[in-house]
Amino acid sequence: MFGSSQSGANAYAKVGMETGVIAANPHKLIIMLFEGAQIALNNALQQMQAGNIPEKGKAISKAIMIIENGLRASLDKSVGGEIAINLDALYEYMGGRLLLANLNNDPAIIQEIQTLLHDIKSAWEEIAPPSVAPAPVNGLPGQIQASSYDALAPNMSRLMKA
Image (cartoon, rainbow, N blue to C red; front, side):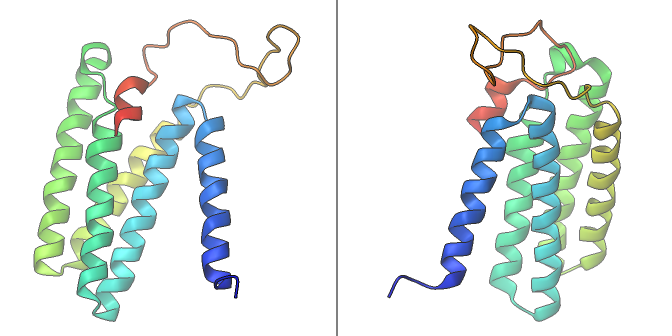
């Protein structure tokens, strides 16, 4: 009558994720992209083991989109220098390898990319800015005042286009 409990749970999860994105700082958004790519790759491995080729392909495509249109697109090579250039090349490598994993039905390649993503995510978490409660603006708690420019923060204009 009111839909399945699964669709209700999915709607609830989507609202929770959207709220997390709205409330996240740029650093946290990048962490969320890493997590999303990892979830997609875990799903791809499960679908591969189950022999569900169409769903495996969708999951790998989702991971590639997160890497290309999220992580890679958010790099600012003019500010990030050699690190950003190296990450760009690594993200490009990951995308190519995932295409091969999909074509050859190769779980080892997916596991290789999972390891790379885990390592980069761990390094990203290590450089996380200290967690600070937002300062009130105009007496309103929870309003975030614009802060100074952070050269290590991802280029949000690029990230939000993805």
